[in-house]
Figure 1 (cartoon, rainbow over the protein chains, first blue to last red):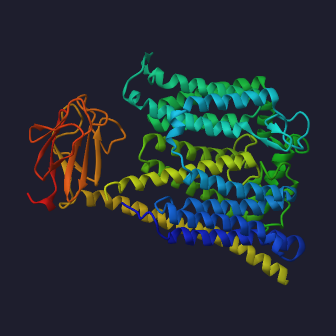
Figure 2 (cartoon, rainbow over the protein chains, first blue to last red):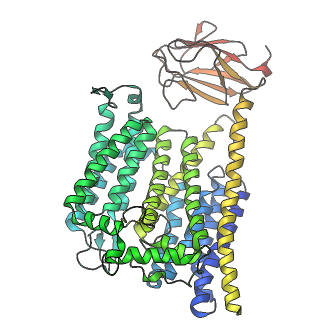
Figure 3 (cartoon, each protein chain N blue to C red):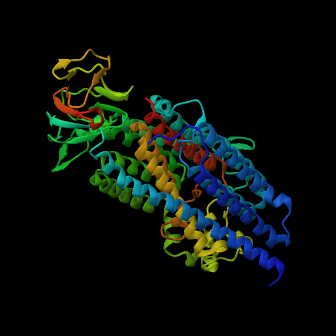
Length: 434
Length: 153
């Protein structure tokens, strides 16, 4: 299957046109609802971001026509929805959101086409790991709360003045890169057998030990920081990547058992975990205090009905932190069950493309990296949507690509850009002798 | 219905219909890809495709008669990176390269420990050598025959 290096990509163009229409309509609707007219200023942000992605589409047609054709329109669609939702939910963040979205396009393009090879990540994997751990450790020592957050909220930010970022987002990325490098490094060990304990054969210890150490360090640091959502996310990503590499269900079962023990311990001894679980089990008991956010989120989802109130016509702004933690509930209120299912399906599309790219990757490091990044998107989306819908205790993490949040968006953009780059190496190797 | 309400309805319809149109187009792509994937291996096994047929599998778990359809560049070795992975201790991790080039098949020993033989003659490492349909190729302890119908016998 050899694809031309240059060439128009019609499927991508069709998908871009659909994404552009959705973005424009989504931007116009809140403006109509708020002041009964659509001004140019209401459409300009969406138009500029869609324009930037259209330029990226053209650039890919010219420079890398063999790369994945679905990812760029999908990112454009996410960006259009995110702009409309965030500008509608938190108008104060509208300008910042536009800036982050435009920067995200640059990051996608740089990761997809920049003059470097992902293999460099593998070569320096231990430097990456140490850097990531130092980042989180630095946050514990010098961290501060988010701008405008009440005193006593978790200190998850690092930076000076108006420039700040969330190291746990970077740490997640670093963990995936490290694991992909490590798994690829030790793949010959996969065929070996580890020690046997009471009739149960362990995977080879040199294979598991450094991963357990790396995971333990990152989890410990995050639990100390009370960033439980990020800790949970890193745990399930690690488990998923180890399972994909070893295909050992018993390892997953044992790890989940250990997780259950750890969760029970935290439930007994960590106030924040006990509170979260209590709210999850019965939000109505504290509907005006601790459970307020969850109750308002549920009411928002319920009031949406099948087709929703229409963008800009609901009351999702009642939910505290709606533009970061409760974007999904806001989407369901204003676009209804139909919109909520469509958004979940878009993450399904992302999962399909990501895993396809992993399966087609030429190098095993690239395959593990693509699979890990895809698992990261999917698990993150599942954890926060599950929290919004009270399927599991709420942990405050962002909805990938849709929530407001610069660190989260840029890390997602870098990951998506890497997927695009890995999708290129597939076809370009095939034509080596042509 | 006021004009504003009508405009809002249109905006909502465009968003929802657009989202599902996007998913439908991607779904059609996925469907086509799955169908192609089902057909592709069948085409590779067809009578006209070049392939490598195992005569003696050594310690690899490839029984005699196993067929490997050949792409234009085929890397052979023990490493999982290779296009044809042969898990035999006599085979190096990156053992040999089989490539279609200038209208012929070339095999190259990539500096392996136990070498490559064509019809019993040991190849000079890293120098590509032409193989024709029917030639017997020994890669470490695994022997196979190259079959490419368009080249004749």
